[in-house]
Length: 82
Image (cartoon, rainbow, N blue to C red; front, side):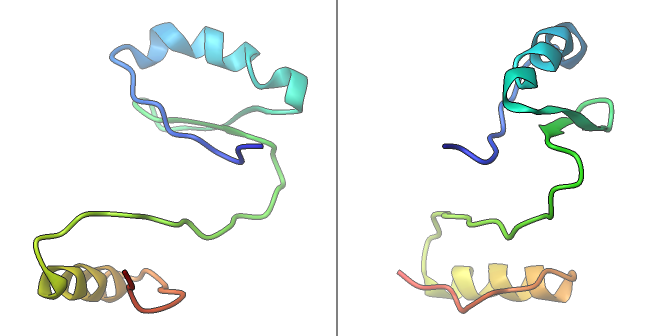
């Protein structure tokens, strides 16, 4: 079962009504609304870490990306790996 999913759309407001109804049978609803971004989920559920898989030109770029993220306040669960 998917826990979360990001979907980009050209008309956030136009699609909101549809997406407001879809998660209801699973106990979900809109939990955040930033205008151009609407988050759906179950309110009160604890946040979890995010796994990201990105491509980079080389290891130096990967290390620079991680360093910038950590310097910006992100928490890294472990060093990047192949």
